[in-house]
Image 1 (cartoon, rainbow, N blue to C red):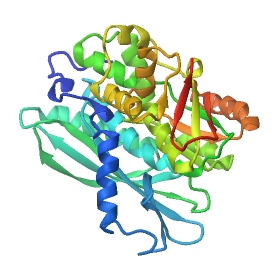
Image 2 (cartoon, rainbow, N blue to C red):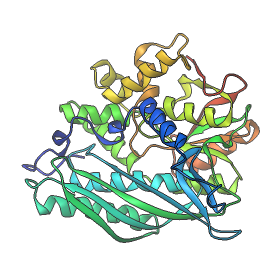
Image 3 (cartoon, one colour):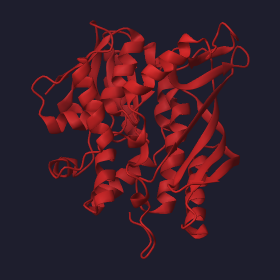
Length: 358
């Protein structure tokens, strides 16, 4: 999928694209730790209805309304990952809604967040907003307003509000040692997006990436709710590696990744060989190696980068009992998450550490 002939290339307006633009994982963690130390973040000690906030942090906030209903509140915005304005709008909105699904919830309301350059047309802007509205409608939610500013770099996303049963919240720290890890979407979005920016992306790879990024995590969340799963997150800007690290650290366990089982988009190996790796992905990998919480074993550098590849609107990563994992994958695939696979397991060991098995 490409932009309209003669239209400006949206991906040229930013040095990075999509969730690869996130602040470095270690920097964000350090800053939040500093703010927490001042007591400024509050939490359940301030209002016991706040089930999930920033201490510990998760994919979204959860605020209980009563014994069976809780709000899920989140926001996300990003720079262009493709040049097609409507596709980018849909991708950015789908990505923002994903954090509601990552908590096991369903979206209810959304507000647009928009930054737009003065030299880009209103027609392109309308296409971005149409794409976003399509994603919100597909999620069964209502688009009820938003906010916009002039900005030299295009940025679009949503504030998303959903609901969840407070007794059935998916949490990063909800997994236990011995559980299998199921990933619902393939990796490689950041690599393909980098290739788009460089004009090196094959059409088949772009189409597959757009199809993945515009697929809501609604079915995956529904399956997780029905099966009573408690551990999960979505894989976005810090890649499978970074988000699994957060998940394992929060659960007080270690993890293993079976790299041969990790699904990937078509053409990703060739694009990696051509050097199409986002700077943010390489930064995540190098930080993990330097900190010592990732042991790549005999994995080559390209496969290590793939594990750290910054995903925009990536899949859910779910912890499930090993005896239930095969049936879970079968159901996910039947409902449309055709790349779903068991990619590893949570294990006993130093919390947050990850080892790779080639």
